[in-house]
Length: 127
Image (cartoon, rainbow, N blue to C red):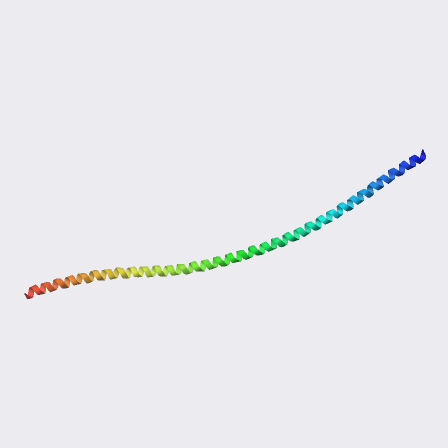
């Protein structure tokens, strides 16, 4: 009986040792999996940072192009506005000259009529 008892006590002692060893192995496996997971996450993080960096560069380039285009459009608009102002001034000047020309025609016609009247009156007086 004592042998069975000793054998049972040895099994009890071995079982916890085996359980501890199994838990240690499981812990090592879990640790390796965790380390692999960390490495994968670091790799994905690096890739994501590179991708975001490239997208940031693209966005920066697009922003610079947009700003340059805005400057070009502003310059073009200023030029057009300046030209339009000149054209507007020329139009006002032309309208003024046209009005003056119309007045001169009217005056010229009036003077002709006066000359014709004066001629008729002289002709009547001479007769």
